[in-house]
Picture 1 (cartoon, one colour):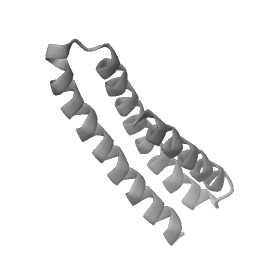
Picture 2: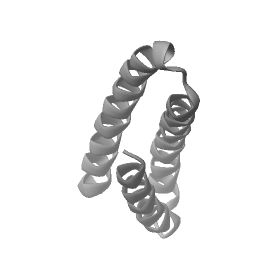
Picture 3: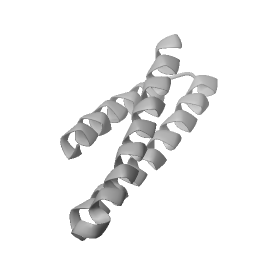
Length: 87
């Protein structure tokens, strides 16, 4: 999952570069989308870190949280890509 997160981070960096070249009104929209993605990326990273240090008893519960956060991040990323492609 860390490798997938790293790949997604690289794609977000590409989107940031595209946003930097956008017109002012579009740039504001891109920036808002990217901030939301970054918040979700941080949440997934924190969940992954918890998972790596979790006891066996807590591991399954944390794993469920990681999976939910990951799915949320993926959906947000797909929504952002769709909005970027519309511009």
